[in-house]
Image (cartoon, rainbow, N blue to C red; front, side, top):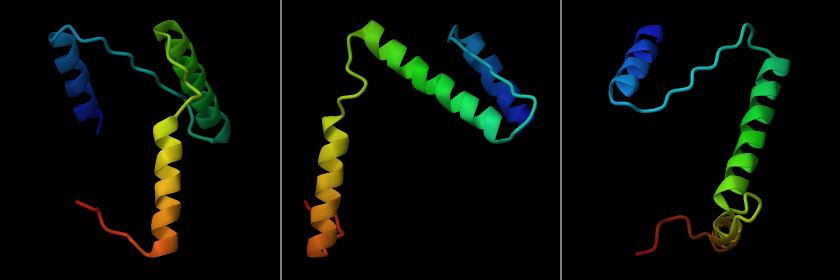
Length: 80
């Protein structure tokens, strides 16, 4: 896994792509929770800077409603 990670980072850098590598010293509830909060806040800030409403997800709500309808009617396949 570490060889894949190093190779991917090297490849991205070699193609002038931005790379951010973050490490944690332990894997537990606190560390994972901190990472989740970090990425949530980062998403909100990036959305704000891009002029996007990070809390308006009409496609997500539409997907939930579609799933509910399918569960109630027994339609599980993809319609063409």
